[in-house]
Length: 53
Image (cartoon, rainbow, N blue to C red; front, top):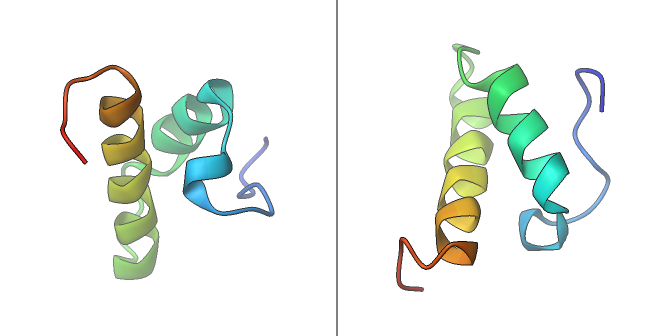
């Protein structure tokens, strides 16, 4: 994934897609992008039992 988001909902991202999305977009100032990054972080945490649904 090179600067583009996968064409599917965040919960369907692979773990690799989540990590790449977070790394590539975490410093983007756009509020919509930051919202998606936050969703990626929450999904990553949920998968590792760091966050309850």
